[in-house]
Image (cartoon, rainbow, N blue to C red; front, side, top):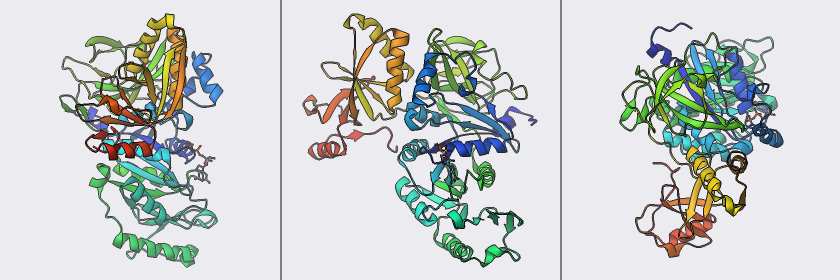
Length: 526
Ligand code: GDP
């Protein structure tokens, strides 16, 4: 892969995350994509370092005990002269704010849907974050080798639940035991599922029918697909590259990741439309990726796998220029210089063939407590400061107090640092200033408790408050008497007031009673 200029190098990057509900097939799909890339290169996976220096840490013990992986990774591979970065979005029980924040570092998302289940809860949450950013979303409807819902039903659900237009790039011919393949509207061909002695791809004539005599043409399922495709052509959404780019229309692909069917077709179509690294918004306006000056922002900090050393790994998305080992940069928040030398070991040494990292790529930096989530790093004299990452609405809350009241100092220091780092959200009640922690996933609390004990020597008592619906108040005046157990008034760490509602019912009841109070959710559309 020989590139001539920084611009060309950057334009060959595609950086995306897969959004899906657990079990939809994210892992299977990722494996197949890596397979097409010919090699698995770890550009940031700590999972791959099991035999390394972190293997015996307490951190891994949490992972082991729960049978999950706390670590997130970046997988990089080349395909047709394109360098692809896939960012993992931890799901299952390790769903957390990090999962959301990962979506801040990508230029597009691939949404995987189980054809039998349709849109599931976690997919919807992640989708909302993508929509908030207006990034392109590509949909892969998976498991067509099994009996699922009809494609028309799935599309209708997609449009209704997600409120996005869809354009089927291909259409399944049957499913389950009678899955014959896909009718590829984009490539104008039929791709057969069970190929055996037949060709895999059958070309279509001008009328959209397969050229030549093939058994598939005699099936009623194929005839039905011809009718459905005609219906899509006439009554369906129009294909619009512009709408794809702005995240208003999602191209939809059908396939089966497990049997590796439709994945390569998906990948190639994806590469035709997925955006190269996009400009990032700084406080002084957008920064073009091909700008010579190096800059990037930290979207995730992988904390303290080795409590003895307090080492952390900060994940940086490069937004402009080119990264070089040992380069001198400035941390925008403190305006202090930093040399990125030791800190870059994270790029595995065996990547000898790898060109240096440019805009769109992700690098891992060793961190001893220097970085915070959302931090900007830049080279050169001209200060670049990227906009603050958005707040994500927590759903789970606990009351927290120190076990030992004599150790207030370490308790407060620990909380303050972990909150700043973005590991957890902190709220305080009015007057009594009780501490309440908020998270989007249960694991965040466990990690918090563990780190308070190990890093700050502070045992905490956490009392679950269960799930709450957090809504910020837009009005200037707050009437503290409106606070009750069902609609609790608290303030966030920037002192903005918000209510924690017990449930949807309490929220609606409150709104009915207090129509003058404007409630907002940062994760709603802007
Ligand atoms: P993840 O939780 O989204 O990462 O899902 P996995 O990739 O681990 O897949 C969940 C389960 O679904 C596994 O048992 C897979 O083998 C299975 N699976 C994934 N893709 C397909 C598919 O295309 N067809 C069928 N029948 N099973 C699939």
